[in-house]
Length: 70
Image 1 (spheres, rainbow, N blue to C red):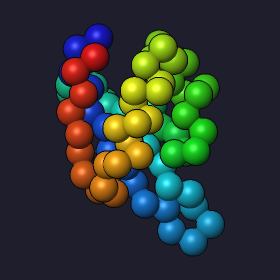
Image 2: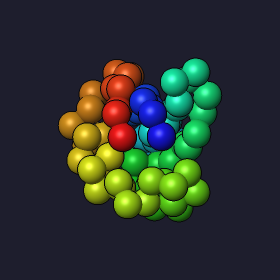
Image 3: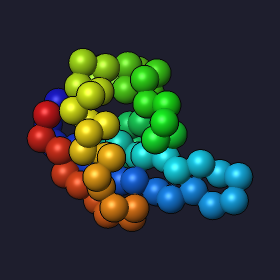
Image 4: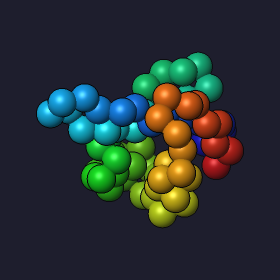
C-alpha cells in the first residue's frame, strides 16, 4: 500500500469523534470511531499497523490531514 491520508474529525452532540483513512486519490478506505479502530483497520489489511496508526491519531489535531507512508 502506498501513501494514505488520515483525518481526525471532532464529533458533535451524540456523534463521537471519528477517523477517516483515505488513499492517494482521496477515496475513503476506512471510517471508524477513535476509540474503536480494530474492525475497520482489519478490513483494510492494516491490523498489524493499528498501534502505530493510533499513536499518530492520538496527537493529531481535529480537522488536520496527515499523510502516512506505510
